[in-house]
Image 1 (cartoon, helix red, strand yellow):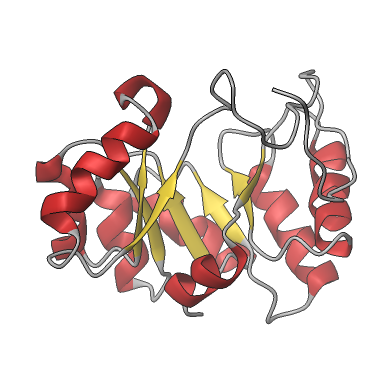
Image 2 (cartoon, rainbow, N blue to C red):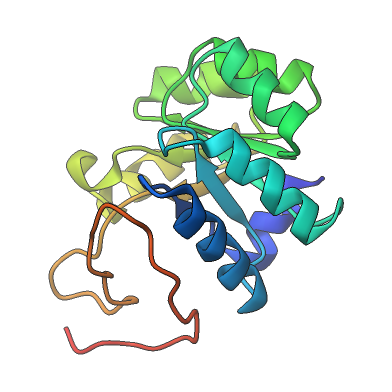
Length: 190
């Protein structure tokens, strides 16, 4: 899987996590049916490996399906066996190198310029600034693009909630279980 190309084409990675594995699976399948191409199942959700395995069976072998919150080598190996074909990390750690060694492209969470260089060296296919809102959001990303525009051959993603005054998809109500929702594009008044 070419994660960089997929991120450039689709520009969205949907994250599924929750305390109800059945609801999480339904959410993955509903998002896939609605046309969301890049879906990540967070390992912090209940029975996430089972959700990944069952989603892979339902989606077939070629659909992008990621494992998120990959922190350790075991966090990379188990989802790979369950059917994940990319990994997402909240930070740099052994999970990045292990996933890369397994052939899983990695969307690595970074915060500082030092971490950006370390992620590039570790083989990350793309970077996400995490947590972006706390770092300054788009202004921080713009500042990083200056020195890393030509030196970092990575795609960038920003992990943040909608800042005040911005128009994005509305936040969904939070609950212990994940609920399927329509991925039909819509905007909200700021």
